Image (cartoon, rainbow, N blue to C red):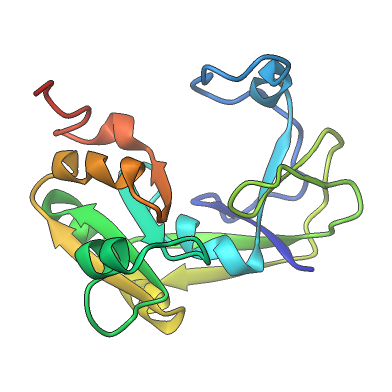
Amino acid sequence: MRLFHFSDNPAIERFEPRPVRVPSVRAAGQDWLNGPLVWAIDDVHQMLYLFPRDCPRILAWATAETSPADRALWLGPGDPRVVAFVEAVWIDRLRSAKIHRYELPPATFRSLEDAGMWVSEAPVVPLGRVALAGLDGELARRGVDLRIVDSLAPLAALCDSSLQVSGIRLRNSLTWPPAPA
């Protein structure tokens, strides 16, 4: 298993556990996830972080439980592995950004059993670092269909679909949360 951490900082020699910048409301007994941790993502799900750090995005992909209707409505033809929705105001930053992918040793990490996320309560020294640019191309190489939209708000309905959905940095969107109906 390979684990990664993505950053705009090219000089991290050791990852220290730290609390999340913006704490989330967690289920009972899960408050510790806001505490000091080192976060990582597995190889299969690294496409979730091939974006400039603050870029709001929604990614969706089919699972064994996905209905044919949801697949057709949200993923469309061609059976893409993953669809990533990004607001048009972010596309230039996506194309020009440079990020750094750190590979982390898995020994101290435990799985959250949620979209490839892993955490460590111990400091972690990276195994190596790779600089990535042309992130739209990086996404394409991993089978991600990038879709540029004016607003992420209409995609709120994805949460009620049978697809696996991940919304990241939505607080940075000009159109999120959607206006109440």
